[in-house]
Image (cartoon, rainbow, N blue to C red; front, side):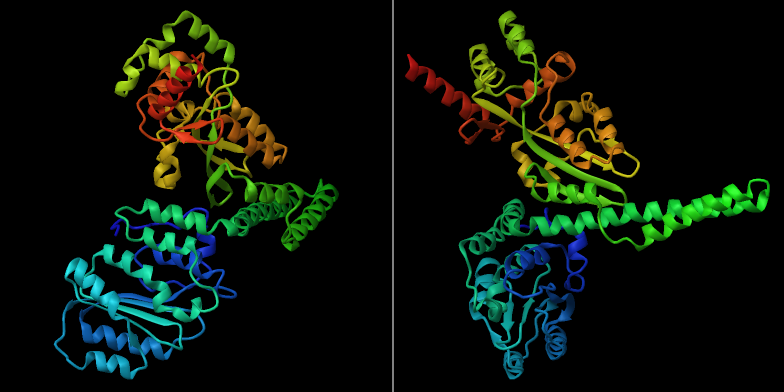
Length: 470
């Protein structure tokens, strides 16, 4: 049961989509909203979210009374109410009153919470309406995250025709874990079928913002021309002609609701690109992270380093794992990462902000990738971006592509930059990068056959392979 709050929709679910859904009043985080999308979107036609409330009262009786009032208003949208209270009532008829309203009590849920935490909890549902409620004598978010895992028991009608799958069970079990990462990853797995839909929604907002800026610019031109007409009659004929042209542009932009070819290509590309994660739109700026492999470095430079031997000296300004305090081990691993046909590739991450109206590219140093997505725990930040917010010469090429409205090309260049390291910037960039690799306990290395390994596991694999070859 994790206490951490999920403060934004889980990638790839866009906030633009969650804004179209019903959510609990005072919902403490996005956990139920994301759970509902993952479990109900394919079960409920024209899914519109989960309505209801998250509310605290002094006593249990008031919680129940509020639930009764919401039960009467329950409509086609699934309703879930979560009540916390500080004072346990001694009303012996409270459960009887609940049953009189046609609600059924899920006794095993209450018994589980009593066993786990010695906290009173009553879970109820309506057998005909899509209405479920929790009454619990605690405001601890851990119990909230655990109790929403019983969604299928509290809204059983929604699961009659489509029973729980293994994916659903894995998602539910993740809510009982001690940190939120397992739940985040299970949601991401469950919503993969909707990635194209979600990214189209988000990118539609971006394209609309771009169009609005164009319209505003055309309107400013119109106003400017009008002002100049008032100032001088000498250029009246010329200005009237320009004014008419701008008005035509303005009305044409105002009327259009469709994407042109470059915009359509952008939407299609981002909807299917597995390297692009955590898409966000803010005005004209598209922000995203890239997860890729190290695939662009100067092999000749590495061969020179390896022949001279100084690159293996252990001077990486980093405390290495015990296994890599041996120069022989450093040589064995690094020579199998940096060569023309490497056994392992480093899993690389980069972050990007593209203003596709002003044709500008930016990135952030010391970016917290894991906060964006637990996936990035097993990735190494591109050292140029991490240390200097530098894109290694890709900036001009990206901005040139944006100017040409080659949005797909601009993002492909960003992906390429994430997988590039300049070995010749040895002291400033490459040595720290090697230190990050040989001090990591995460699965940051991707073997050519598709297996991910930690650097220590890779070292063992390579050593065993050498023995077998002898």
